[in-house]
Image 1 (cartoon, rainbow, N blue to C red):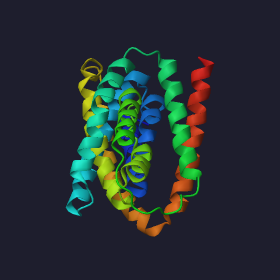
Image 2 (cartoon, one colour):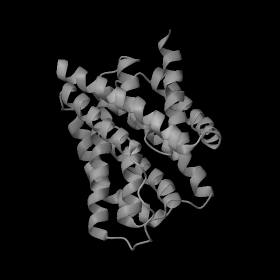
Image 3 (cartoon, helix red, strand yellow):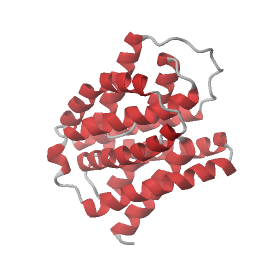
Length: 249
C-alpha cells in the first residue's frame, strides 16, 4: 500500500474520531505518522500539530456559527498556555526519541483511562477561578507543545471543572484553545517543520477534516458511550505498544 493511501486512511480515521467524540481523536495522529508513515517522533509531533491546528480551526468555525464558543474565556485560557506551548515545542526538538515516544504513550494511556471512566455527576455552574484556570491553561499548552496533541481530552474537563463552562460551550471553546496552542507550538518548531514531507502531511490533514464530518454523522447513529469505549480501548492498546517500543530501545 502506498504512503499516500496510508496517509489518507489514517487522516480519515483521526478525523472520524474527532468528529464523533469531540476530542481525543488527534492522539492517534502521532502513532499513525510514526508507525505507518515512517516519521521520526520529532517530525511526527510537528506534523501532528499541523493536522490538529487545521482540523480544530475548521471545527471551530462550525461551533462558532452555533454560538458555542466563549471567545473571551477561550483566549484568556489559551494565553496562559501560549508561552508553555512555545517552550514545549522548542524543547521537543532536543529530546531523545525514546523520551518523546514514552511521554506520548503515557499521555495517550491517561486519555484512554479518562474515557473509560464513567462521566462525573452534573455539577452546578460555578464562577471561574483565575489562578487554577491559568495553571490548567499553562499545563495544556505545555502538553500540546511537547507532544503535538490537541489535548481536547484535557481541555474540556478543565473548561468545565475549573473555568465553569457548560459542556457544549466547553467543547466549542476548547477548539479555540487547541488552535491557538497548536499555532504557538508550531511557531517555535520552524526548524523541524522545514523537513516535513508535505506530500503526506497535506493529504493527512485534508482527510482528517473530511473525516470529522463523517464522524459527526456517525455520532448520531451510534451511542456516544459505546463509541467512546471502543476508541478508548484502541487508544489504550496503541499506548501500550508505544510504551513497550520506547522501553525496548
